[in-house]
Image 1: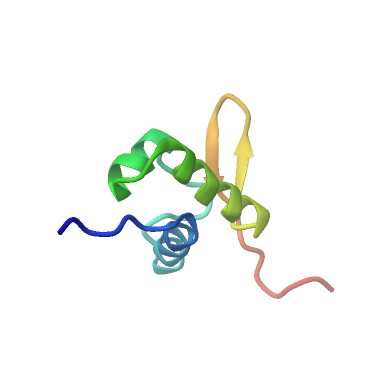
Image 2: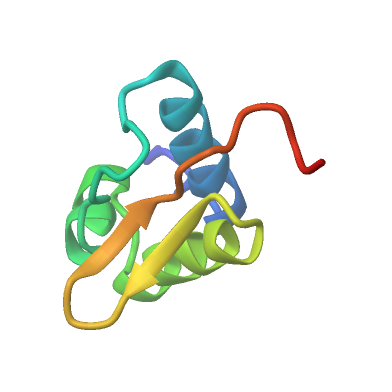
Length: 79
């Protein structure tokens, strides 16, 4: 029986864990939607939804024509 594909929320959680572990550093470019789809064996649209969720959560930022990048985390909060 084939494995059940991950949901977009599961993929977003995994990418977040990779960012928190340091695999993807602040400012690093994330893989493309197609590459994420290949990595997790999901469709392009599922990969895009995962990245959109990360963007909504402020984890990544998109740069039109350049890609999606890990957002720099500011230490200490706002004062």
